[in-house]
Length: 255
Image (cartoon, rainbow, N blue to C red; front, side):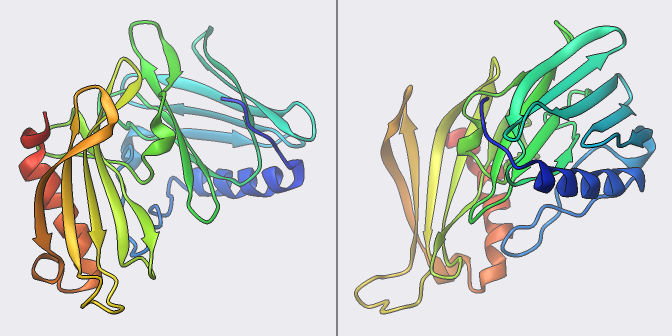
């Protein structure tokens, strides 16, 4: 993953992240309406943090793994991100500091090993995920994860995840993709488009369109169903419950 940086902004953001981690707390990820995300419990993590110049140096322990994470600027644009487990190298990547905020260390796929989630802030936040591979003791970047913002694992089947992204009209229009991660690559299997904008609804009716991705071609889709928007999402904040219930109860339709 190759991206570009501002060291002063990087210093401020990493300092903020370390202060959050040192207190063994972090704020939930901010959706248009705040909703919590899952991470390793406080009881499962021990943190020792220090800053030297522009450096992030963190050691943390989960139930199965201890990782030593370091982030050091290479120049005015790039940052070297490394991790070791014991004496073995687990990660060596070059990333950007521009917009980098609150590095997180969740057990993203719930396999008992800590992972690394990088968030880049902007009009729409961008995410990069490194999953820990217990077979090789490496942290591996998940190819395509950038396409699935605000991803949440299904409770009904942990092999699947769904994303969320605003599509405008004060977040009344939005999109959500159902996907899985196989061999550290994402694969989209379903898509949902919510059109809740209430401007001129006679010509632009509110609806929820749900589509199945055709085979390995993620660019072609088949309509599964159309739902009346206000029947299923009478209020703006109700969409979070709708998305969670729909994907958890219907993911098998997209397999």
